[in-house]
Length: 258
Image (cartoon, rainbow, N blue to C red; front, top):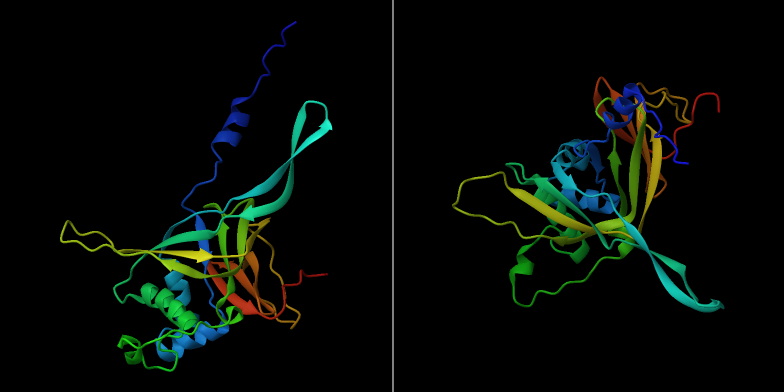
């Protein structure tokens, strides 16, 4: 006997289909390694501590990563059956990001400076030597130019959960060309691809409660993200008066009463 269709209330439908996630609400964090940050400050005049948040807000497009399993076939365990067994998880090779270019070209300087540091261009302040035909390159050790970066996906009202994807040991591997034209003017865009080892996805409450650090100091604002950026450092993101502020600390936040 056929089963009658389940009845669904209008309120239930509204709750399910009028509370869908939006693609335009996300937050990109690109804190460079300490050595890269020092290089950008001393040789490129770019202070990430004061300018980094503004640069990150220029990110107008990116992607949430994917992964797949490498498998091998097992034949003969069951008559007439071929099974697939997973033996390795394969992550996307790169994470791609696109940025609007500011009038001072700071976002280009940020990534070009990072790449220059990796390839030792102008590390001691003199880039003229690289203009000669005899110029060579000597790459830096990976531990000096790799870092953890993150993308946090949240919703406009900051209700419910948010997702943070942390990309382990990331660094810019490719800077795409930037087309220029005398055609109708448009906002200049800059795209970069970053390599990483793997990603870790974490779900957390977008309106988390106030926490204190083990130093005993109390910080105002709701915690909306905690990311381990490597090197014994943590990035804490707080919602204060409708804006997200970040700070770094050497200790993870400890919930009150724990």
